[in-house]
Amino acid sequence: MYLINYDLYDLEALIVFFRSKPERLADYKSALNDIIDYIKKPQGHYGDHNNIRKIFRPYFCEIDEIISWVLVDNVYPANIYIIKHQVVYTIISAILCEMLDNYDDLSRLNLLCDAIHNIPSILIDEVKKKKIIKIMIKEYKKKYNPKFLNDELKLL
Image 1 (cartoon, rainbow, N blue to C red):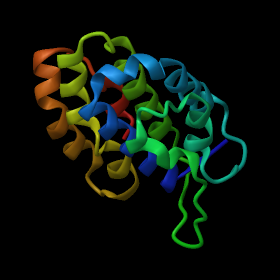
Image 2: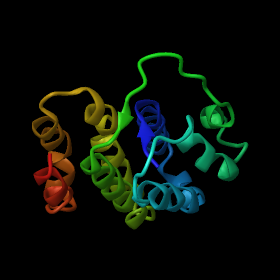
Image 3: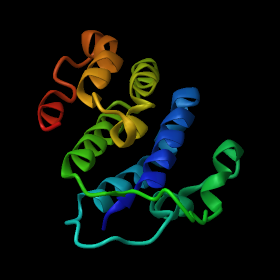
Image 4: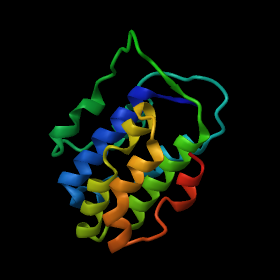
């Protein structure tokens, strides 16, 4: 299924949450794996609204009240953009995989989330996506993973 722009905004909000509370990612590994599985499905047609929220919702833990917005479905009456470019899904998958691969290194995860938290909205709105993303992830790549998003950004 395709995602819409609002799904990417939800992903951005989740990344911001994990930036502020990297220790909580361990409890949401299955949720992120489910999101990855969903976005790796072959895109055939436009699906429902609130896809990311619906996937994440069963994993929601009450102690994380700051992300309780996942419990509410939004209605989007205007400015809905269907994300059809496969490279967006490839980049989002790579980001979530990097988060999962490093969930136990809180310092690294914090820097990663700090570097990537705006990427979902950049993939929707910005004209010079590649240049902006390269600048955003520069410090993370330098300190932890020089190959992070190299292949994926070539597709932009």
